[in-house]
Image 1: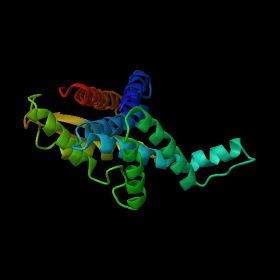
Image 2: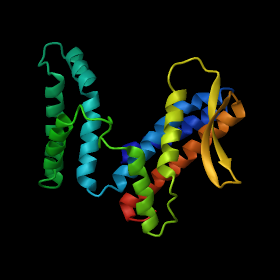
Image 3: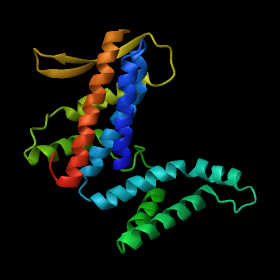
Image 4: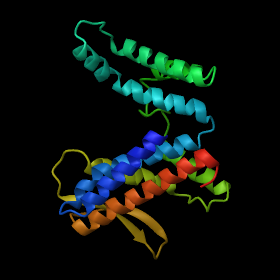
Length: 231
C-alpha cells in the first residue's frame, strides 16, 4: 500500500506542476494515474480479506512485468540461465514468499496461493487484480468508511467514478485533441457531473487539480484506515 500511496502523491506533485504551466491539460495523464492508485488503495484497504487481497494485488502487478523483466535479465546475463516469463515469475514469488515466511511463518503461502489464482484467472475480465468492477468496490469502501462514522456515503459514487475514469482514459490516449472534459458542480440539483467542453485551459487546470486532490484525500484515508481503522 505504501508503494501505491507514494505513486499517488508523486503524481499529485506532477499534476500541480503541470497545472501551473501553459499546458495544464497535459496533467490529465498523471491525474489518471493518481485516480487509479487511489482507487486501488481504497479497494485494498477495505477488502474483507486484507492479507490475501494484498498478496493477490502484488502478484498480479508482478505478473504484468514478468515478460520484460525476464527479457531484461537475459540481456544483462547473456550466458544464462535464461528464464521464461513464467519461470521468472515463479522464482520472484518464491523468493518473496521465503522472506514473508522468515518474518511471519506461514504467510508465504498467501503469495503462492495468489500466484495460482492469477494464473488461473489471467483471461478473466475486467483486467484488474480482482477481476471485478473497481468502481463498485470503490463505492463499497466509501460505505465502509461511512458505517464507521466517518461522514456519509453518496449513492451515485460508483457512477460518478466510472464517468470520471472514462473521461480520464479518453484524454490520455493519443488522438486529435479539440476538446476536454470538465467536472461540473450543479448546485441547483445538488449533483456532480462530467461533461465534454471545447478546450478551455482554465477548466482543464481546475479539472486535473480537483480530480487529483480528491485522489490524494482518498489515498490518505485508505492508508489511515489500514493502519488505524479510522479515516
